[in-house]
Image 1: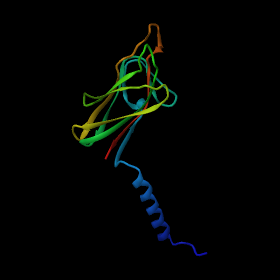
Image 2: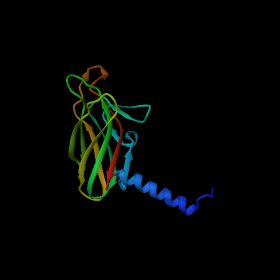
Image 3: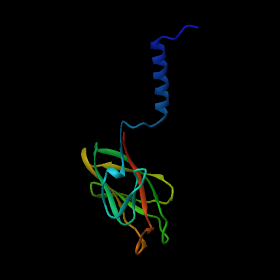
Image 4: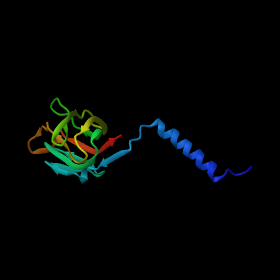
Length: 155
């Protein structure tokens, strides 16, 4: 049986890749932020997998380079249900709250919001835990939040 030429193999691979990627909405610009690399405030603990557990009201923030226009922000997070509520985070862009998200799972889950980036270049992204509640003297017994990663996607 004759071996296919390099060009035939390359064309077949290119066609297969184009078909696969056309079925997926692959953005042209994507950034993944690790919470451990972000500026932090408030009581927190680094998890073994690089996630950050917030066990008090606090923030994670980073300056990100974005183009003006739409952006999808996906936060992978889990929370602890306490005193009738799940943890709530505000997702802020350039000091404006773009979404309030209830992290309603004790297993890591993706929460995606859409926003409009006000200007191209450096933009401040902040996640803020706003409804911590716990037991005095037992900081880990309460409504806690763990952030695994943040992914920013632009078309």
